[in-house]
View 1 (tube, rainbow, N blue to C red):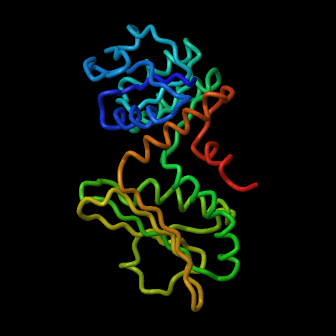
View 2: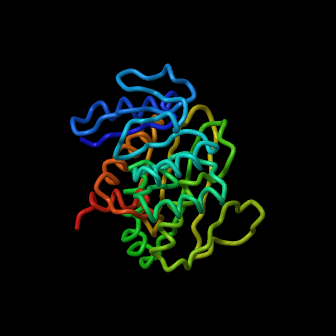
View 3: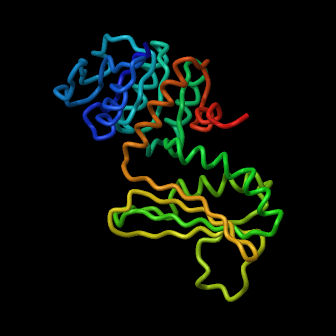
Length: 256
């Protein structure tokens, strides 16, 4: 039985994680950490880490950047693996995470979606084959009208994955409105759409002569990130100390 502590148990993502874990026979949430101690159901919820006396195999964290330093120390002191999903971490905390990973298994990724990370790996051989055949590469990402950054981190991660397979020879183009010239061969165009309540869509387009190949990932709910975190927790439960990403999780799911 893989025993899980959920950090940020009362938040939306915390509830998603709890619901998903409940569907597995070999996993169980044994405790939660949250300032709101009344959010627990079948497990105790502690308002702070120093009050938690429940042992677990892995912590899944969807909390607050202020909590993470103490959480990393807790995992290091107790030998507990951690899936670190909280965003907006400072460089100092990221360095602390790297140090923690030397003693316990730690996983952190820009995107926790299994589908997106599988897509990143699938795109590598495809990009090499189609770029050699003269196909142009474009990425279009769509998100809701409240999203502040553009392009999305996931779009950039997809571009980086493609570029990695192409020996990092391609440059990224975000805006062609001020250019009066034809498309350069070795560029990856990245376009952003913002509107409505779109959770997240990422489309990779390979445009060749007389044919187009497209790959698309659509997120319908933030629950998919919780699903990825739970799969990551399962992976870490048997992993050695080290710094992992979702690429390590999906590697076992790809054909050999």
